[in-house]
Length: 189
Length: 244
Image 1 (cartoon, rainbow over the protein chains, first blue to last red):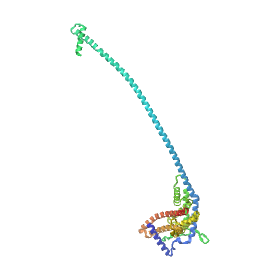
Image 2 (cartoon, helix red, strand yellow):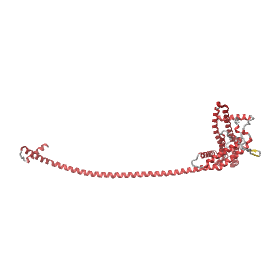
Image 3 (cartoon, rainbow over the protein chains, first blue to last red):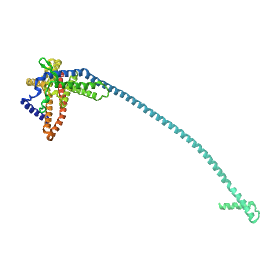
Image 4 (cartoon, rainbow over the protein chains, first blue to last red):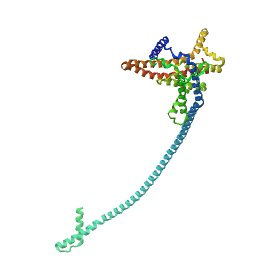
C-alpha cells in the first residue's frame, strides 16, 4: 500500500518534471505519431490470436478436459463395480468358512461321542472281567482258608510224631498226638 | 539514452515505413512485442492441447490449469450465460498477461504500458458489452442506470451518477492497466539509474530495492491482467444478467 502510494507520488513528480522539460518531450505514450500503427498491429495480432485460439486451440483443450473427466468417472464406476463384486465374494468366502467350521465342529463332536461310547463299553467289559477275576480269586482264597487248618493239623501231627520217634524212639499213637495238637492250637488261638 | 526513465516507452520504427494514405502503419518495436506475445500464447497453448494423455505433461497441465482458471473466473463472476464469451476473455487475459510478463524482461518493450493499446482494448470491451446488453434486453438495458429501492427524489442525481460511472468504465479500465505498468517500469528504471550513479559504495541499497521491485512488478503484471479480465467479466455480467 505504502509502496504503491510512494510509487504514485514519484510518477507524478516524474511526469511533471518531464512535461516541463522541453527536450525530452514528456511521455512517449502521449505522442500520437505511432498511435495508428499500434492500433493496427494490436487488431491484427490480437485478432489472429483470438481467432486461432477460439477455433483451434481452446476447443481441443476443452475436449481433452471432457474426455479426461469422462474417462475418470468411467474408471471410478468400474472400480465401484469391482468393489461391490469383491464385497460379495468376501461375504461368500466368509459364509464358506463359517459353514466349513460348523461342519468340522460336527465331525469333531461325532467323533468324540463315538470315542466316549467306545471307551465306556470297553471299560464296562473290563470291569466285568476284573470283577469275575476278583470273585474267582476270593473263592480260591476262601477255599484255601477253609482247608488250611486241617492241613496244618495234619502236618503238625506228622511232624510231632516224627519228632517224638526221633527223640525217644517210640511210636506214639497218632490219635493221641492229634488230640494234643488240637489242644495246643486252641490254646495258641 | 539510459538516464531517461521514460526512454524505455519510446516507440520506434523497425523495418520499412508502411503508409496507408496519410496514416503511418509501420512495424514498430511495440508491434514486435505484440507479435511475440500472441505467438507465445499460441505456441504454448497449441503445445498444451496437442497430446491428450490421461496424466498431462507439464505444458498440457499449464494449458489446462489456465483454461479451468479462466473458466472458473467467468462462471463465478458472470454466470453460465457468459460461456459463449469465454474464448474472448481467455484471449484477452492471456494477451495482457503475456504482454505484461514480456515487459519484465530487461530491454523488452511493454505493450500494455501504452495508453492507446489499453484504451483500444477497453473501448472495444465497452462497446461490445453495451451492444450485448441492448441485444439481450432491448431498451430495458437502460434500467441499469436506475437502481431499485432508491427514493424518487434522489433518482435524477443517481441516474446521472450511474451514467457517468458507466461511461467512465473504459477510461478507468485502460488507465488502471497502463498506469500500473508505466509506474512500475519507471520505478525500476529510476532505481536502476541510482545503482549506476551511486556506484560500488552506495549502489547496494537501490540494487536491493530493484530486486524487490522486480518481484513486486511480476506480481503486478499478473494481478493487472487478472483485474482487467475480471472487470470485463463483471461488465459482461451487468449486460447479461440485468439485476440492478
